[in-house]
Image (cartoon, rainbow, N blue to C red):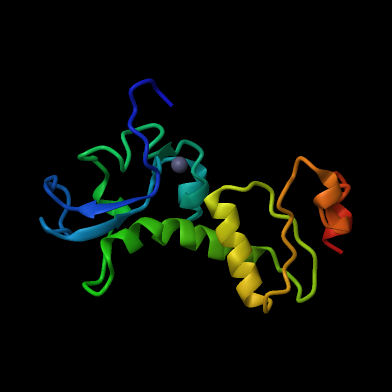
Length: 165
Ligand SMILES: [Zn+2]
């Protein structure tokens, strides 16, 4: 992050101005903003894998983010929110999609074991989603500094292959 960059990677907002090349947005539209600005040139774009752009810019890290009064973003990064959605819900849309995708890709087996590394709010959302999907049977390690409190299956986190079988 560059000094002076205003943070805010998850954001939504109201369109205040539109560039000449943008035709599918109107001033006043309430939008959720994809916080990853892709280069549009790398080989991953060619294969439709824009989520793993090799030269992505992150809004709120590489450019000013959602805590700024105004943010300039490409029109293609804006998705208009339905009238029925609260604008704050838009702020949570991309993190929620990321979590759903990660849970889908995890191929989590019923009664299987999984370790969620990290304790930020995204990690907790992963936990709550898995807990909901598995009827409240997910065991939560609450203190990663004290291994005595960890469930037995995460005692040796370096042996991840054992955790997935
Ligand atoms: Zn790219």
